[in-house]
Every structure is written in structure tokens, then in C-alpha cells.
Image 1 (spheres, one colour):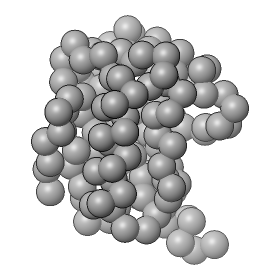
Image 2 (cartoon, rainbow, N blue to C red):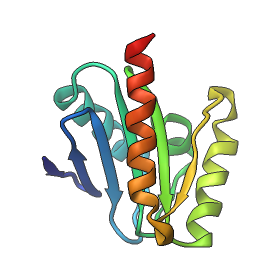
Image 3 (cartoon, one colour):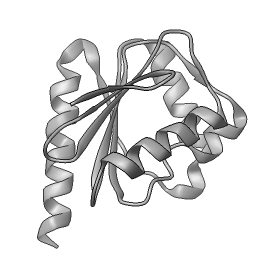
Length: 131
């Protein structure tokens, strides 16, 4: 089910995979991240995974980088990037959050990356349920 937030869309799939697509040119602020957290808290129950669809170019404020994707119940995270610029922004975000020890892949949206990311997240959630 697709939901519109102030900066982009969230699409919640039945298996608790949540796709996030920010609008073109947005600078994600701490307030936007808090809006994300509130939305997820109200709409997603149990363990879940995030599929960050970076089809649009956007950036993060310093404060947003420090708190983005700090969700209770978040078990897996994958990015789908469509440009080298998007890959660089994603890698900078990973570097700024190195204390979290995130282990997430970056998939190429130009090479069926969305489907690959979705299947990878499904497998990650399934492995967690089996343990």
C-alpha cells in the first residue's frame, strides 16, 4: 500500500518490506526523518526491511544523517541506485553511520536492481525468522 509523506512516498508490501522513494531535489532534514519514524511506528508491525529506491537525487542534512534508519525492528536495509552520484551519496551516508556497522548492499537500478534488492531483503527477513 502506497503512502505519501511530505518529502516522498512509502510503499508497504505484505511481507514487511517498506520501499522509500524521496522526491527529486529534497534535502532530508531531521524533521523529515522524524516524520519517517512516526509513520513506520504507526504502520509497520514487527521486524521489517527497508528498500531505499534512489531513483531521484536527494541529500541529507548532517542531523538527518545521524538519525536516519534508526528504527526499532529494522532488520535489513538495501539501496537501489540509478546513478554514480546516488551511489556516492549512499556511500557517504554509510561512512557517516559506521558506528551502526550497517551491512547493506547497493544494487544498480539500471540492471534489475530493484528486483534483486527486494529478493535480497525477503531472504534476510526469512533468515531472521528461521533463527
